[in-house]
Amino acid sequence: MARPKAPERPKKKVFFRRRKVCKFCVDKTEWVDYKDTKLLQGFILERAKILPRRISGTCARHQRMVQEAIKRSRHLALIPFTAD
Amino acid sequence: MRTYELVIVADPRLTDDEMVTLTEDYKKMITAGGAEVTKEESWGRRKLAYPIAKLNEARYVLICVSTDGKSPLPEVELRLRQNDKVLRYLTVRTDRNGKPIPPPQPREERGPQGPGGPGAGRDFGAPSRGERGESGEEN
Image (cartoon, rainbow over all chains, first blue to last red):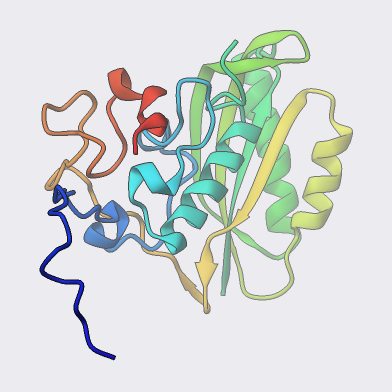
């Protein structure tokens, strides 16, 4: 299979998106504290939903920890389930 | 060795003394069950993120427990459930492979997402408050 297409393909705009880095990996976090409401507030949207990984850039492992911590924190009414 | 954290959310109408006796009762139960109370922390009255039992405030207490043998917590939990002064409680195991999980590192040295920090964009960590909501519609 030859590759004849390369020259005539119209040039696409090249986007450079900065690679998202999991902030917990950078800090080498092993445990996300459910008591740390300041931290968790940063991971909920204004409707009090959990911020998706796609936006925060958190890795799967740490997202699970964040998720667990948020749910625990909600149970204790430290952070809301919904925006009222 | 196993370590646990127990958070009790209690009725705000309790007086300080009543609150102390309540925590002492549970601490006694824990020690009677063969465990050790390593730390006790009162957070005082805090505003709730949402009302529980039509109350907007509650008293919080944190008790750290460590044990080598069997855990006294099932019984403690049973009593917590029966006590109507206790609005909520949470017990969490805080050890992994027999070692207590090291406390989270102080985040100040890096501070990639200080609240409202200038560089805190959606590329790193959580977006700052102003950008939330609409950030999902990108792409």
